[in-house]
Amino acid sequence: MDATTSAAMRLAEHRFADLERENRRRVAHAERRAAVVELERRATTRNSATDLALAGPSS
Image 1: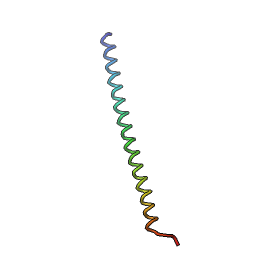
Image 2: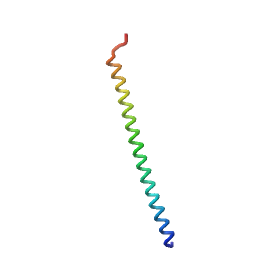
Image 3: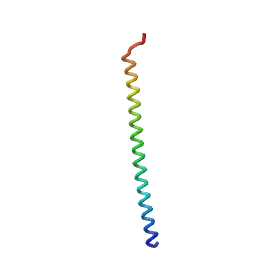
Image 4: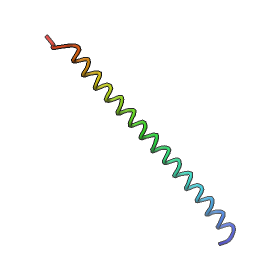
């Protein structure tokens, strides 16, 4: 393998590693965001149930 081919392969490997790292970062961010949304949804549901319980029976 000549020097040019070797350099091109190293560059491609580094670029691939960069893309993998960026993808892992994006996936982790999306997972964290989904967890936050789920927690917010649960809090809203819990607050709604609490509000109904505190309101008592409707007349």
